[in-house]
Figure 1 (cartoon, rainbow, N blue to C red):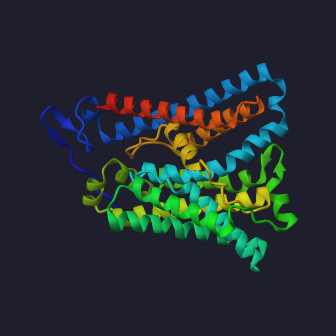
Figure 2: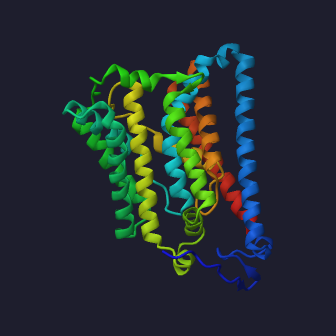
Figure 3: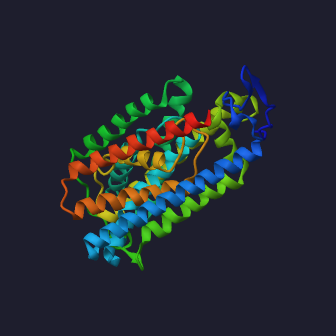
Length: 350
């Protein structure tokens, strides 16, 4: 694989155009200046999300002073662990211009079920930390292979694998949870260091740090952004687009498999419906983080900030006695708002 070459500026009927074919002020800026502007925009999104999160916490403290207790904050981070891992994978898919992976929830459910069944068949409990991400990687690789082979919209293909994975999880268990896991595993899954849950500290934090390092400091990360900005231009620049897309889907599956392992350790059982609505919430977090739905723009720190905002909002509604049905509705509303903001941002950039 060779490093992408710097494309020559193109021209259009209205003057210079950027690689995406846009005209106007953004097309007349140098690539370095555009990179700085996109970086500044990403930082502003993270700051805005953290301010919104702080404002939500302040409101909750005013209404329910006990909400900032260490126990509640630990619960928020514990609930954030699954979504944070899944949203990280979804963010990589969207940034790379590989569409949207709707199978993430089904992958979490199926890996949790298969992992618990493997333990019941004699696999040591410590082996689940290896097996579940490996199973998830296989499922993600299958998604990547399908997208590369069939050349069909990833949204449709992953909808099909979502039903395949979710249906398999339900069929294997008849809809029932699988238990019998050792106490030490659930002790770790529910343990904490201060207010930080151990799974969040040991898995989420390192995963995001590695992703940030890879995307911002390596050629591999630059290739992902280039592919998201324009697949054809990336291919002409020497980037192995199909291979990179396959790797992205495989990594996303591995992250979902890791979330499946966390669910086993946290709940003490493999639940066939543990991934319910995770695809909606993960996509909402990615959109709230300012990741362009068409790819090529966005930053990973904003995804984690958006996850914390969503989970805090859901926790507040749950503790306020709001019907859980409204929680799903609020997440859907957030997704619509994020899509409007993304489209407005794209229109202003033209």
